[in-house]
Length: 467
Image 1 (cartoon, rainbow, N blue to C red):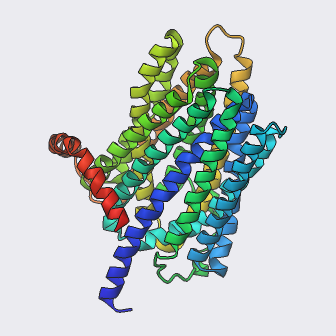
Image 2: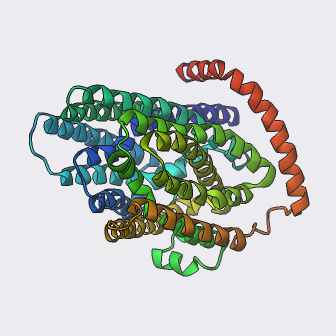
């Protein structure tokens, strides 16, 4: 393949990757988002909600080691396509399970845990291959802009899926509460179909040649030993602590809004969409700011504010259901902004500081640590909810307050301990402040202009996807 053909092929593949991400977000919006509400509709306890949050995560992280083994034996593209095909089948089974519950066949909640765990495992097996493959399609200088665009477009379609998913569930719940399981069956079937479409698009994405090098291999034990030494290791440790703190409360907000605040599925979807819109609007902003200040500085900014949504949730205990709903819309919006920045900046920083040959192993090993943090956080959260059940204040909101405190402490650790690599040019604090001021003024003007042309922008995106 000559140089020009390769440039054109990579450009087309990046475009197809954006299309694939659209259908992935549609599948997540109709599928993954509504697994927890489905479990709550089955009257699941906080303990089993914690298991639903943690078991797929720990299982998925462990099999990523298997994914690294597969990379040595097969093409990355083949691994990803087979995994998505399996996910398609599993969401079809989850849809079928929901339908059987609808027709009054008595199925245990444990079947939902098993099927969703297998679904997450299938995606996790392919994750190292997909991360390695995707990274080879994008030049390092284009990381922030490309992933900002890719994530924003995907999030826009995720919003559409979440909205329609909630409307479908409320429609079927109107006449009879048990009819909601027919709604779950329908939206889970749509998730299965969108995963199937992803496979067709994946086949048209070019896979650059990749030969794993044995000298790039290192064991999980070696990875753990090196963690405290370098900047990547410190990033993994502190990120794991933040994930741990967040999952003390994160899995139980849905239980709180359905059980305690008595929200409808339409209210649930509005809160989800509010967070997603925050992410959508923030991706472009954080991507551009990363180009000005660097990925680490943007990571520090967002990490510092991650504690804020959790502490704001706590104040809903002093509100009635209607006021709490109105209050939580901007809270979710803020959460979407900061978590989008955290995810985008940490992902781009990962690509910057980890060499191409070691990305798949570093990704898999770090995800094992993150999974353990999620499991530990979920278990502690469910335990605290149970033992604080008799407290005068809502136990889930007490856990949220505790989670907020820990997030703040761990965010300070990240800000203090993580330093830019020596290879990255340093700038003074005063220069940073001046850059941020100029950037905010410039982007505010652009945002005001773009917000009025948002319908036209959406039309352009849809037209581009169709072409």
